[in-house]
Amino acid sequence: MTVLCDIGLEQAIDLVREHLRPLAGVEVPVEDAGGLVLAAEAVARVDSPSLNASLKDGWAVRSGDVACASEETPVRLRVAGLVVAGAPMGPAVEPGSAVQIMTGAPLPPGADAVLASEFARRDGDEVVIALRDARAGRNVMARGADVAAGSVAARAGEALSPPMTGLLAAAGLERVVVHPRPRVAIVATGDEVVAPGVPLAPGQLYASNLVTLRSWLRRFGMEASWALARDDEGALRDTMSSVAARVDVLLTCGGAWKSQRDLTPRVLADMGVRLVFHRVRLGPGKAVAFGVGDGFVVFCLPGGPASNEMAFLQLALPGLLLLSGRPPVPFPRARAVVECPVDRFGNDPTWTEILHARLARRDGALVATTIQTSSRLRSQALAEALVIIPEGAPRLEAGDSADVQVLGEGWG
Image (tube, rainbow, N blue to C red):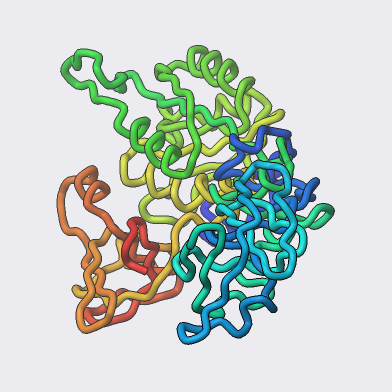
């Protein structure tokens, strides 16, 4: 199959989505399922609560016995006993009696309401009630009110928040079927690239891309192993073959363009990887490639820091989310007013241009200011949003409205 080259960003996104599906479901303990996506519906095995239960500390009563209670004509009821959470069913509430009850305790037979303790006072063997705040069902959690046995507690495709995992546990589910997080490995290439912490020789640089990518992955609940590889076909093939055998997704950094020293696409082809596309009209990030191997997929990311991160955020990260069963949209989008004019790089309208920006609110409007600095790494580090100039759109003038991806929180 022919490799598609120099394609538009939207076509590249469509191709990633076309070739990826959520990973097959696996069964995990419910306490380990937070942040994952259900691969099969979760059906409740028990009612929760398992009995009618009290929502308050107070008095289990017959609502009819207190219907006429007031400060002028308080009602006195005989205290028939006490029931607490986890204990057997308490004594029955006969007409003219009440049972003291604790939060979570089963409602005794005969009672149909609970009067909160602050609205009554104990007087020897009686409780004095001067408020009719105990109509039928008051302060009572009905059996199965949280979840009923046999009902669908959560549906396939639903992301499991911490409270949802608690609901599933209450429904009697010890294990659930979820889409696992993809296993990811990063291989950074280049004779000049060294691991953080290693003494730096002249001409060498630390693998900052490796650290940035692992941090982005961790933000989305994923971890990654990593390796460094020299600019040598044999060494690169050995490293990538070894790593690819253990992962779902391989991310490579560097060697993705088309010079003699850019070996990654060539080595991947030798490994049997079918490249779907190579080079996208995306600035920065144009050298990105995407391919499908035997049991894994690969995103070849450029080596330049800005290009590496942008290709990851726009193509690889959405693909990873899709494999996790989540929507392939990592960041919320908003409209923002551009504070300063923004030129297209090379003035070519057939490209998608993306720029780092800071955000502010002025007069109720979201304002984006593109970051003007000669430092690629500092521009990435300061960015709160990405300003997008899509294909076919002209340069942005000050005051124009632009589409932005919001990277940080607090700008909704």
